[in-house]
Length: 229
Image 1 (cartoon, one colour):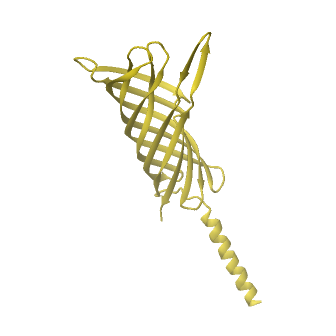
Image 2 (spheres, one colour; image 1 turned 180 degrees about the vertical axis):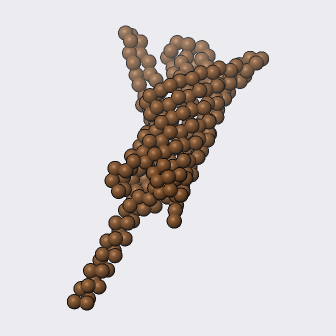
Image 3 (cartoon, helix red, strand yellow; image 1 turned 180 degrees about the horizontal axis):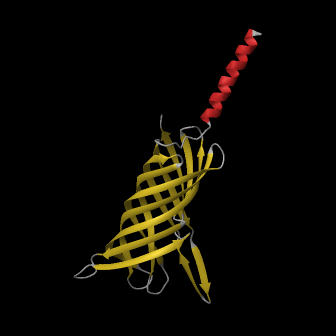
């Protein structure tokens, strides 16, 4: 009888530990450490109008975002992070429209985020993140030269300020570790200034702003560690 009682106590302790380990820890005072990676893949496309046909090359936008956050209250995290990425800016075609190339820029930026978690189950959360960021991107333009020919043009520098809304899901594989899936830039406002160099005696500067829904959407997958007591 005594051995049976001890066995029951032992099993109940194990069950309690297992159940506690599966409970997510998004508590006030916790730190979050981690990062995410994402890619937005656009495939080649072809179009035909009468006897003429053209082909638009595909491209891949990618980003890597390490970050650190602080739980100011249960299920609310304020964070800061970096963003290293490549970005599609525009396409350029040769004079006879027989050749098209993509212009891509690489960049780095910093962002401030505010994330709210909402529990679906003990280990699954839905989150909504609002971010404000500043980024710098550089690249080389391409310009047409004759027919079926493109050459390097001047360099350009793009500086942007953006506000984004990114929803997603977070799954806790343990009480400390979580896998994070987000849809970045599902709603975004961007104010951008672009400076073009080597186009004449003076640099050329342009400014624009855009509000988009779903354009430039980049799914990301990340891993986060919740550090607390």
